[in-house]
Amino acid sequence: MKIVFIGSGNVATHMAAALKASGSEIVQVYSRMFGNAGKLARRLGAEPIDDIAQVYCGADFYIFSVKDDALPGIIAQMPLTGGVWVHTAGSIPISVLSPHNDRGVLYPLQTFSRDREVDFWDIPVFIEGNTAETAGLLRDLAETISGNVHYLSGDKRRVLHLAAVFACNFANHMYTLASEIVGEEEISFHLLNPLIAETAAKVAVMDPRTAQTGPAVRFDEKVMRKHLELLSDPLKREIYSLLSKSIHNISVNQ
Image (cartoon, rainbow, N blue to C red; front, side, top):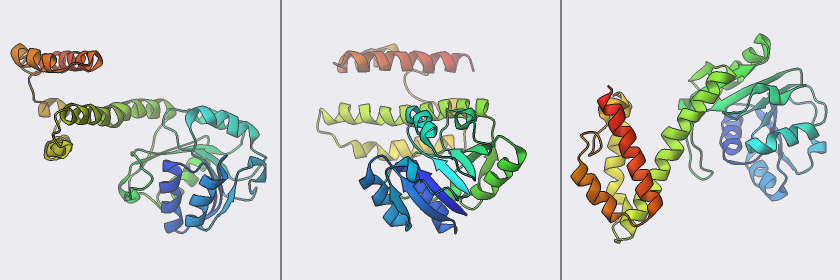
């Protein structure tokens, strides 16, 4: 397959590398910053471009992997091409790619950092196509890089993306706050690593509600009050109180 990537960020970097390794040819990489396009294109043996009008029109797939708010503007500038237009966003409907005839979604459910390698084969990839034929083409493409491919409608994909924000982005922010809390006393954040690893390991085999522990479950007001006294930042105090209330409400309603 000949593929053009529109975007050179984290998702594009990892997906393009996986597709190239599986035998697809990445013919071009577009970015509005030529240096970014060039960096990824060199890795892929592709042509870098920073002018969307220079897009190669004979590819099989055009994979748009840009910021959500930039996607409509980029699509409006795209020249007429053949092939299938695909975006990788979790919360954007397939209709954003209209009026192109063959359009779809290729959404990998994973957090990507540019310089951290991941095994794409284990990543769940969710596809959607505007026709059964396009969905079939996307499934064939996705199955070259992942052993965990599923069809998911746009409405359900948006819900999954929301859940992913809670499970990943919000959870990681908690690590950031924890790092700040221990850092104020010059305690190494890495002492928390075994705890973080065990928490993640438990929810792989247990229902998260069953795995929940801590003072909020039993509503230990004495401990929670002492924790709040240690927090000088009003926002951290508010986050602690809201999360504790949510944890307790869920625990008593199981």
